[in-house]
Amino acid sequence: MGALGAYKEANFVELAAYFGSLTAYVATYIWAESKRPSTKTGIMLPGPSSRREIMIYVVVALWAIAGGVAIWFKANLNDLAIYFVSLTGFVASWIAGEVYKPQDEVNKKIEE
Image (cartoon, rainbow, N blue to C red; front, side):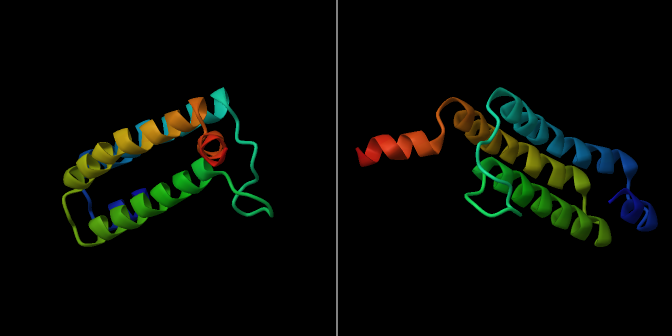
């Protein structure tokens, strides 16, 4: 993404803010994996997949696609950074909730 930004002459201060917009989310994911590692397999392996792992791949892919398109069309990266920062609270809260009360446990109690 940095190379694309350099090629398209993006504002590197805005690009830094955009990279920073993903930092809190990734940090929350790393914290969650250190507190309660996933017991499910990775998305590329057979078996049930970790929802946290799927979520981080989806968010990073969307983040990269949106950033690449914004750089290509010379959009304001600060606006896009604010958009992703505003989503971080929601997604990070879900990840933290999965650490303390995984959805699988909640679903088991509902079925009983």
